[in-house]
Amino acid sequence: MFRACLALIPRRGTTSVPLSLVGCGVLLTSCAVGPDFMSPDAPAASGYVAERRLASTAGAATPGGNPQSFASGSDLPGTWWALLRSRQINAFVEEAIRNHPDIEAAQLALRAARENALSQQGALFPQVSASGSAERTQASTTQNGQWPGQTSLYTLYGASVSVSYALDLWGGTRRQVEALQAQADYQAFKLEATYLALTANVVTAAITDASLRDQIAATEEIIKAETDQLGRIQRQFDVGAISKSDVLAQEATLAQAKATLAPLQKQLAQQRDQLMAYLGRLPNQDRGEHVTLAELKLPRKLPVSLPSSLVRQRPDIRQAEATLHQATATVGVGIANLLPQLTLSGSYGASGSERLFSPTTIVWDAASSVSQKLIDGGALYHTKEADVATFEQDLSLYKSTVITAFQNVADSLRAIQFDAEALKAQAAAEKATADSLAMAIEQFKSGAVPYANVITAQQSYLNARVSRIKSQATRFTDTAALFQALGGGWWNRQDETSAALPRANPGYFAGPNRTTQEAM
Image (tube, rainbow, N blue to C red; front, side, top):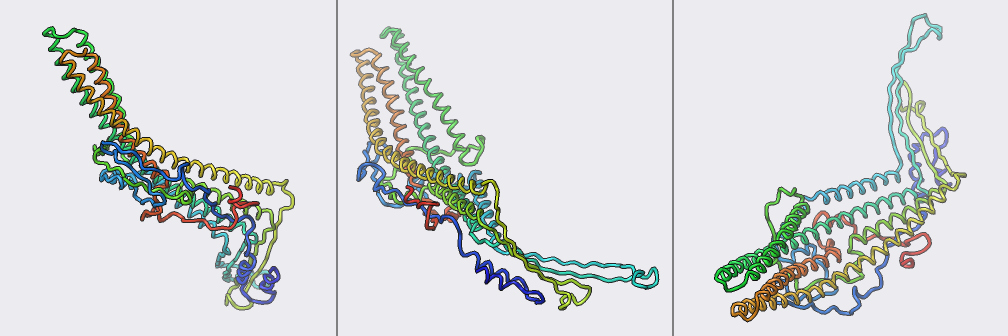
């Protein structure tokens, strides 16, 4: 191979253009030291939870209380929030994607990473430069035997092309390019992670906003009812039908109900500020748009992708994989730095006062240089060993990310199941306390029970109603959390964000001494 390259170097006395040296690069760059990356296999898991089959959830006789079933192996839609059937949520999500600066920042970070990778690719090619010159010279002729004071004027022209090529004998430069491409992959999935987090946060914030509005409405309704009740109690006291203690008890109950209103109003105001931030607005740009729990539709069938697909669909797992890929390529760079480095260079040009490219004015040169660091105190070796340790660290972090992802999905599935049971119980409790309150009021009117029974029933009903509203909202946020845990369906979206994402990382080996499958 080296002899073939030497044969391409022009001999003295010839006018062959030394650009033929470029062909040496093809012969000398056929290998790349270090490990080749291969995407890790998914864990051998048949499901996310211990049960073989997830049963349908419980149903409740209340809006948002329909049972849900799980469609194992079904794919996620790219716009999963549309399953809630809320035009306002759709509008919120579209506005957030369009206006939130985090999306733009992630897009620019991806652009910068891809440009860096393309920039490094330039080192794989010969570096060619051209130069030209024209010099007007006046020389004294006295020394040539001519009369003193006579001068000689002439113009000297020059033109040349220079070529320099650092041969990537061991693939170190290619590994650097590979590492930067992996960094670009990381930024691509960081963009998708930002997209997924933002859309999920918008949906959750809108649902929480709706829940707080219903809680406030329920509290205000109770306050109005208890205010009316206080008026009736006061009139009964005025005619001597009841004692002063009954009036004081009702006043205390009303005050307690009013005390719960301000904290809810504060939560709603802060939730609105948070929602405005997600939409890319300032707090004073709130136009009052909101969602109601009554308009939301709970999806009856929830698609649940297979465990084998999760590692290809979760953006955080793909980020960890890209980091592992970058670390693998960096090991190759460290190994290549331990080996000799070869550079070829040459130039071709002409220099003269006339007939610039005649045989007598042609100049050229060709050279090669080899460098090998002999003594560096072990710096390069230990740098390579540090790269190997970083690879092992990133492999462990990758496995940790996978475990956390599976936990997220399992937690979301459990939340959907048990929160459905909770809503069923809360709906029953609300109905029971409402009936109990109506009965207590009738019994008090007939003198069968003291007014303390009515107060207790009122407090129980208020608590049950607010708890039911919270449980109702939780079922919607649980559904959103499941879609987020499964990756959000970015692979099924048709937009610039999803189109920018890499689909897979090909390769052969995952580490310096073992495959990723063995390491897992």
